[in-house]
Image (tube, rainbow, N blue to C red; front, side, top):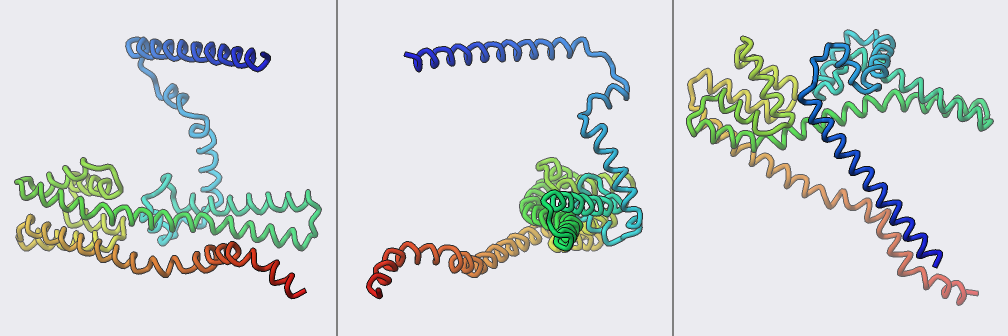
Length: 301
């Protein structure tokens, strides 16, 4: 009987809570509809106040701190190139990225040092672990940036054959090359289409086509895209049919993708060897030979 009463009370409480939430949701919907008709024009200050606290206050403070810490990396061309290859994540500049590395290193050093001091660890061990934490904090952003570059290049490499197929079909159907490229850029929303849109925007602003495409290859660093751009520039300069050139390029890219898939398939047995030897085989030996070990030991005794 107490259990039944508890269940009834629980159902009643959940029912009341559901009704309250549903009524509040309906009220919010009505308020949103009324706000669409009674909304007044907001100034810049009102728009800034609508942003989250992290984006409005914390992010600018951290950016200023990163810039102050990384002032020595303003002229680092290699870091600027790596950030460009990664797609400029978070609109980071070389100074901000270097400052972020220094900030994370100092933060990890301080946290580990404080924990070791509270745990009353020896001074030598405290300095050792704190130094390891600081070095790891300095290396982690660089490792993350390298992974971002590889991830972006992989996405572009994967999307390129399908984009060339659509581009070839559009050009064959009678569209101009720029119009067909615009159609491909509007079809998907990935890194390759963003680069196409940026190249088309540069062309509209007065940049020559070959210069805009060369800049696109520099921003991506993908070998297949570089060969495609070289073929497009050569066909444009020599007056070769774009449809035939795109068809040939599409077939070649699909062949390369098939070859890369076969290469990865050939690497699979080698990659599976280490988990099999160090993880699966020991477990199998324990299950199969484990029951026989006590008998062997007992027989020996």
